[in-house]
Amino acid sequence: MDKRKIVFAGCGGITGAWMNALSAFDDVEVVGLCDLDPERIAAFEERWKVAPAAKGKDLERVIRDSGADTVFDCTIPEAHPLVTLTALECGCDVLGEKPMAPSIAEAKSMAAAAKKAGKTYAVIQNRRYQPAIRRFRRAIAEADLGALTTLDVDFYIGAHFGGFRAEMDHVLLLDMAIHTFDQARYLSGADPVSVFAADWNPSGSWYRHGAAAVAFFEMSNGLRFTYRGSWCSEGLNTSWEGDWRAVCEQGSIAWDGAGDVHGEREAGGESLIHDFAPLPIPDEEQLELTGHGGVIREFLDSLRNGTKPMTDCSDNIRSIAMVLAAVESAETGRPVEIAKEI
Ligand SMILES: NC(=O)c1ccc[n+]([C@@H]2O[C@H](COP(=O)([O-])OP(=O)(O)OC[C@H]3O[C@@H](n4cnc5c(N)ncnc54)[C@H](O)[C@@H]3O)[C@@H](O)[C@H]2O)c1
Image (cartoon, rainbow, N blue to C red; front, side, top):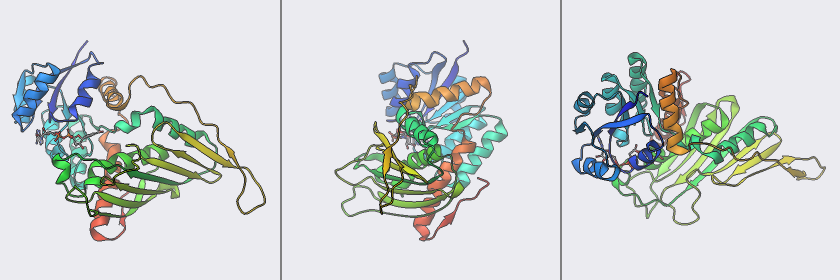
């Protein structure tokens, strides 16, 4: 079988999730490692027992010398545009970590470069490959409760990362909310129309900027999506997937982001508060591959079959547009429209 020849750009913490996933695949081979920090490359080689044909800081050279056809971009968010554009120019397909880019202009240029090169550039949105979110999504789709009118999520996790996150601007919106906003699109099938958002750094925060945020989105089909989140709240953590409520015309469904999905349907009555009946909830879907493994497998299969992966940049740009519009709203104090043509 022809193996995809992979260069990892960025050899830091998240590559563990990628390499664990790759261990189940026999159609990939790591041929190159690129990182600005040689110690990160050495640690990667040691941990995963790989002997790359090329390694170093210069991505173009590593791709050329290793004969790679695919780049896995695991660098920090600011580096994603340069890494992706370089990889595409060198004729590689790219699967990159979230978030796509720190600005919508850069995200657009990356999507345009992929199209021009006739290559695939897709983004890791590993939350889409979790059995629990798929169960909640099915519960909403199959409940027959009328239109989904409101989607609310709370995300509260006191996360002590250090590293690049401690220093970056709008850390919660840019580095974390991309998951939650993409989940909202995945759950509802709706696209963003506009957002009004604020972020701030609460006293006691161990981040430099924007560790807490709220955002109110208008979505297509009249759906409203609300988000409240913090990365510097101690105690009463939600799950990483968030604590969700979906409100439909005739009932509501809740998901704690882990194993609990439950709901109620309006069941008539004459009093102020009507009666409700519990909703039947579908069983959890069995997925062969979850998280990173699911997205990477779909990406590799799409290259073989000539199909578009679910998180292709042409779709994922609408999720990063939600993030960047929320950042703009937080900076200007005004609602921001999200262009339809994105
Ligand atoms: N999908 C998820 O659930 C998930 C979880 C954690 C992190 N991430 C994402 O993964 C990415 C990396 O995060 P991390 O936690 O591994 O960070 P990290 O700091 O541990 O690793 C990033 C690495 O990239 C290297 N790097 C930076 N700029 C580079 C460049 N121009 N060329 C080559 N190497 C470069 C750094 O030297 C570092 O070794 C981020 O985009 C982050 O948001 C995703």
